[in-house]
Length: 297
Image 1 (spheres, rainbow, N blue to C red):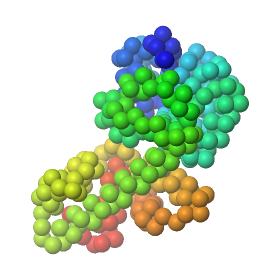
Image 2 (spheres, rainbow, N blue to C red):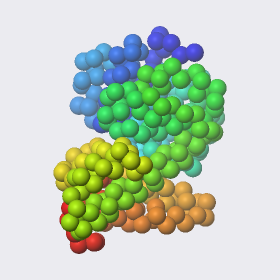
Image 3 (cartoon, rainbow, N blue to C red):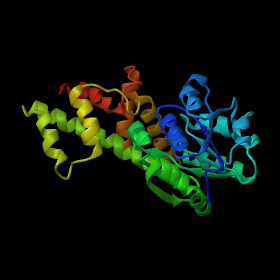
Image 4 (cartoon, rainbow, N blue to C red):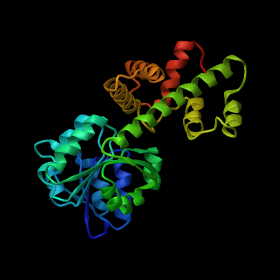
């Protein structure tokens, strides 16, 4: 059982990482932090966190190490690189990767850590910065069930819906499924609003009506409002959703699968990136559909 006397490391202090680490501090845990940009660490240092200048140094002083960085290569670097976690963590340490990365790469990283008697869980999340701030993230976990049980009290601090899925990589596969549903739902809402507008019906009232019915969802509530306002402040940036969908495409190819809807929405995200909208919330997919269809809401 994890207790507050154990040190917890946190690597990756972006929109998600900072509030998650702060919630761990508020829960009474001693937190060690690392960020490539030390400026991102200032508020957490002020809150009582210890800053280390490499993942290796952080790991040598931590019992549990969270990673929450942008992509597969970043995880590989902070975990396996020359100054990575694998070179500093003690046998029995636990790495919890909250990034969204390739399931197959996750399995390989876990295998290399296991060779050093270091456990790993893949634990990608959904819920956005708001969920991170409130400590209500949905956390999808892959790895050994015994390791999951050990760290569950810590995950309870930062998550509201925590589900053990299965062996290494299962959390990442679940996150891929999440991103498929989110991206295609955004596209569906975009088309619905465009149809309403072209029909002379107010999309604002359409959304209001649909929120109370079977089509209601958090995406319709939050992203739908962003679409109506044409204000795409992230949220979840297009460049990250674009990255995630290409992870999905690659995972499907490894299995010999074609996912037509996923391939279509990934093409839309490719177009959104070409339009230099990488920093917008991914609900800006509406802009691509408006351009293709020729109707603005």
